[in-house]
Image (cartoon, rainbow, N blue to C red; front, side):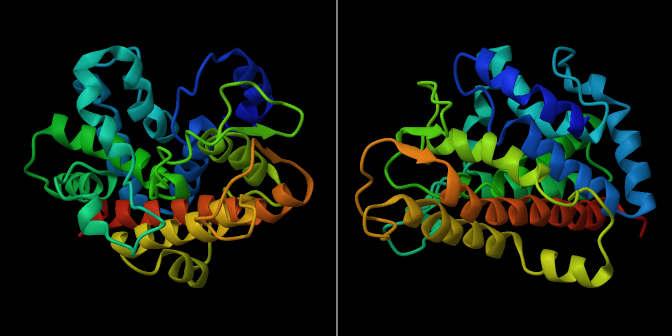
Amino acid sequence: MIRKLIALFALAAALLPAPAFAYWEYGHQTVAAIAWKNIKPSTRAEIRKLLAEQELLGTPACPAGTIEEAAVWADCIKKLGPDYKYASNWHFTDIEICKPYDLEAACKDGNCLYEQLKRDLATLKDRRAPAADRVKALVFLIHFVGDMHQPLHASDREDMGGNKVEAAWGIYSPQRFNLHSVWDGPLAERAGSTGPSLVRSYSPAERRKLAGGTVAEWTRQSWELARNSVYAPITANGDPCGPIEGRVVFEGPLVDKLVPVARLQLKRGGVRLAKLLDMALAAR
């Protein structure tokens, strides 16, 4: 599945008329595939049982029968109409990077990625919750952990998480590309397909290092990455809040600098998703 997506990426990018997905399919499915390799057998069995009831989601046009399909379900439902608009704000936590870090202010109404992820985790843990609620919580959780690890889903510079910053990926410069879509798409694809495969079983020591901390701490880490690794390298003076001059072109040294950052975020996302799934579903 992942290799096939790599081969199809260029064609899909050319055909889509506008940014359709958050973190696009490749990033989300890579995170999910890493998690699948690192969860406990009992967790894997529970996920299979829950996803076998995907019909409870009521979205045959957006399947969720595998963890890779589940990883993009929350984006797929956006095209199903206004009945699913309720989830639109759950894909991000807009924390201003040019002000002191304030997670509480960004989620003051509870309608953000950080708070929804916690609610989904609680629902998934509750074995007495209705099956339909637990299936939906599972597919949302798988997706939102991926979103959290794309730094522009945890930050804002009064630019809609980078959507207002024009960008180009090398010589490929469709009008729809912007800072956010570059991190969602081609940069995630380059990171995941560069070097040894990220989709593998990690050692206990690696998992402890990558998955240490809490959801709140992971959110802050992504926010800090947005300041230091997303915005600082593209401003005129290296100040994350400084001026951005013209369209940002991602090529050469800039891409080389960012690939390890994006690669680490995919790895963190997958191992941390495995941790949360084990917390919620592993045999007690």
